[in-house]
Structures are given as structure tokens and as C-alpha cells.
Length: 305
Image (cartoon, rainbow, N blue to C red; front, side):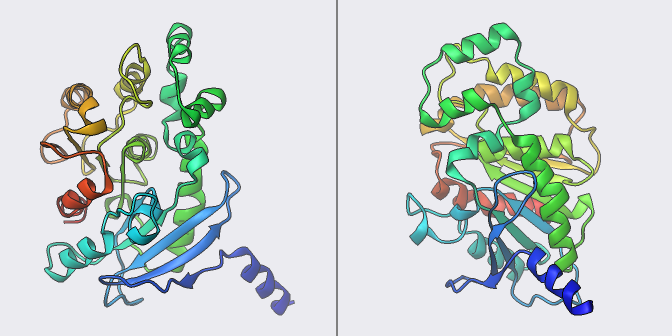
């Protein structure tokens, strides 16, 4: 009976292995297909810092678009965030305490559906939805328009399946104060959404180049209105929580300054101060992993200090 139960437990747990990759520091554990009752299975990488010990407990940083974080040789644009380099450097210099990173890979076909805040979508009225449907979209956002977001299910996967697995199998500090999240572009939107929907789980988030338009135009686009309508009602109360926003001024980031100022005004009205919130502009920075890598040290310092 015991052997039978052990076999069932072994089959239930996600298969994982040490990923044979040259890292600047730390060790990467790969779960090729993390099963979920909420969303399609996907790959998850867990980065452990140098000197990792099960006798010590660690804060955890959850990051989206996991395939873009560590290895530029396998990414579509041959760029990466340089997460292992930056985290190792900050830990070694004692600017932050050692921490664990959980990198959740996206599924390209459903990335928009997974990352767009679902309740903000539902906040659009009939006239606004009609305007949105009249805009010409590419293949990715056509699927998004037809099916609508599934980000509530994606967050349930993170909160009810992935995080419990990480906390059960690694020595984590599991409270909100020690649980952070970061992402860029649409990953910035889902990080913000997680902060609003689960403030008791994710205490600190970083939203880099937050893709406020949701699609790729501002003209006649009601999505920012829906997002800000949602935020006005669902921003968490300021306290020990923290949020980072940033953007560049080139390529797609050129769409963001006015919208970010509107988001900033909402945070100000809600009572957030420099203790809990930072918005930073990087002149001439574009919308790319290279740009995000260049400021990742500041972001990690804000989240993990």
C-alpha cells in the first residue's frame, strides 16, 4: 500500500531536472510540463542562487515570459533579460538577500489571453467593445478578440497550483512581504493584475514597459479606459506592498508616457507614496529584452532590498 501511494505521488509531481546550461551563477531546475487544472501545461524554470541551502529560507520572485530570461541562444530574437547575471551580482555584492526565481514560460498562441486583465476586459461597455472590434488586429489579437482573456485562470494556476508546489518543495519565505512578481509589456499587465487580485499573496510587483494599450494602437482604443476603470476600483490599499513601473520612449514604449501618467495619478489619489511606489522613465530605451536587462538591477533592488 505504501509503495502504491508513493508511485501515485511520484506520478503526480511535475517531472524536473537540473538544466544543463551555462549560467553566470546559481542553478536552474527545469519542469518541462507543469500540469494544471486551470490552464494548458507549460514549462517552468526554478533558479536557485549560489550557496543555496535547505537550512535557509528564501524570498521568491515569480517572472513571466520565462523563455526570455536566461538563454539568448534559444530565444526568437536572440536577446535575454540576463536574470542569472543580475541576480548573482546583486546577491554577491550583498545589495539584496539571496532569493529564488520562478520563471513561467508563456505559450505564444495564448500569451495575450493569459496576460490581459480579465476583469478590466469585462469592464468595457457594449459601445467600447464595438469600437474595439472595429479595429484591425493581427493574428494574435484576433484570437484575443474572439475568445476574450483567461487571466483569472492563469492567476489561479499561479496561486493555487504553482506557488503551493514551490513552497512545498523549496525552503521559501511564503508570505506576501517575501513574494514578488515581475514582467514586461503584457507581462507587466498581468503582474499588476495579480497585485490587485491577490494582494495577500503578491506583496511586491514590477511592471516594465507596461502595455497599457493592450493592442498595438491608441487610436479609438478603449482598452486603457477599461484598465483604469478597473484600477480605480481594485487597487490595493497602500501599506507594506510595493509597485514599480517604468517605460522607455522609443519603439512601442513611445505609446506609454501619457497612459503611465494617468496610472500614476490613480496611485496618487489612492495614497501611494515613494515608500510604496516608483515610476521611472528611461529616455531612448526601446521595447526589448536588451532594454529591460539594462535596468533589471534597479528593478530587483527595489523588489528584493
